[in-house]
Amino acid sequence: MGTEFSKRAKGAEMKAAAWLGRHPGAVLTPAAVTASGVELGWTATGGILGGTAVGLGAWYRAHPDTFDRFAAPRMRAWRRRWLTYVGPRWRNALIACDLYTTHRKTGEMRVPRVVRVRSYSPSVDTVYVRLHPGQHLRQFEAKLPELTEALKVERIALERVKPRVLALVVERSEPFTEVIEAPEMPYDGDAVDLTDLYVGETEYGGEWRLPLLGQHIFAAGATGAGKNSVVASLLRGVAPLVRDGSVRLWLCDPKQMEFATLAGIAHRYADTDEAAAELVDEYVEDMQATQRMLAEQGQRKITPSPVTPLNLLVLDEMGALLAYGDASVARGLRRQLALVGSQGRATGHSMVGLVQEPTKDTVPVRDLFTTRICLRVTSAAHVDMVLGENARLRGALADEIPNDPATAGIGYVIRQRSRVPMRVRAAYVDDRELDEPVEFVRAGWRGGADLRVVA
Ligand SMILES: Nc1ncnc2c1ncn2[C@@H]1O[C@H](COP(=O)(O)OP(=O)(O)OP(=O)(O)O)[C@@H](O)[C@H]1O
View (cartoon, helix red, strand yellow):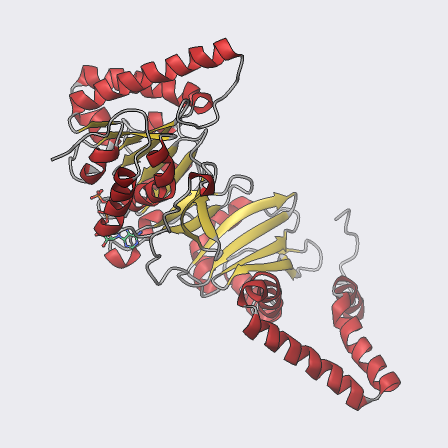
């Protein structure tokens, strides 16, 4: 801002001129309409405006997909910008929350200015604000609950975009009011992209997809939070490749219930702590054999096929395996998982680990996982344990998701590039829909070894 010598505030007309400079549309739009009225006549201008409205209406009715993708976010953002995040309402909310600075000489209260509004989904707005010198993201973080109330919204997450520009990710309402249907099960292996599998929906109205190949997934959630639906959705997605032998399932299921139905199509299945430890030992041996094979062939990583399959290790209730089991078994297991975490990605050895409670036993291993999901948890401290430091502060309020089947499957992931927590909901796969891939795989089994027969 430079040095400020005068005690006089900037003139109102100068402020207005600066405002118009920043919002050329506010001058150009009325000017264009007036020019058109004078040049073409008011009837013609009315016709053009009416025609545009009718055109938009027709687009809205005829092509919901493209309208919702291209036109709706822009129209919504424009409307929100000028109706919600503008004028006294915005100013009063920020002043009430002490998020303003005072001009040293004139005593004028300066509120951060809204520079842009994006509205990616009907329930979420991203509001970019320019900070005044002396302001920092930290002040906003400290006042987040107050600001959320003042703006009358559900939740706000924060992100520093660049120096002095902050983004408020504003969740205006709960985006997930309906259960999301189980994903389709593709028939052909070619239709499956192991780097991009559908698991549910995001709060932005898009598909929530996860990579399996070259990645490890960690999902935390209290009992009934819906952890299984993440695994079940992934399994439906990869079913044709399990059938063809390009994906092998290694299941550790110490609770002996969640994935019992999948035992029949698993390459290996363990239902006790000891059996799980043996299974993981064998899994690591398999990984090391693949490493040797890749080294002999001079390759860096595998392409999934029946010869070099993707080996998917599913660890249900990792907490039980690592904490409550026999201490030496748990120690060995931890060492093996560390190997898989650091070396398995190139050899096609991916893990999916589920935990009920992120505790001191499970948190060290969480760093081995490249994708982390936090469904409903029972304590605020769990959120950062799963998603990383400050995730909750930035809006991942996983501990505030109600303990209610109506909100099961809802959770947060951290978006890779922006680091913003994103609310997601896993599709719901019921028992029958989980049996389907089992029958499907059994019916067309083309894998190498015989399928296990489970009574
Ligand atoms: N994705 C989802 N969408 C809607 N409802 C779901 C979803 N997932 C689970 N539910 C509901 O929540 C209940 C509990 O789900 P589930 O047993 O899968 O949770 P969990 O986290 O795996 O629990 P646990 O740790 O006890 O195994 C289900 O019976 C179902 O009614």
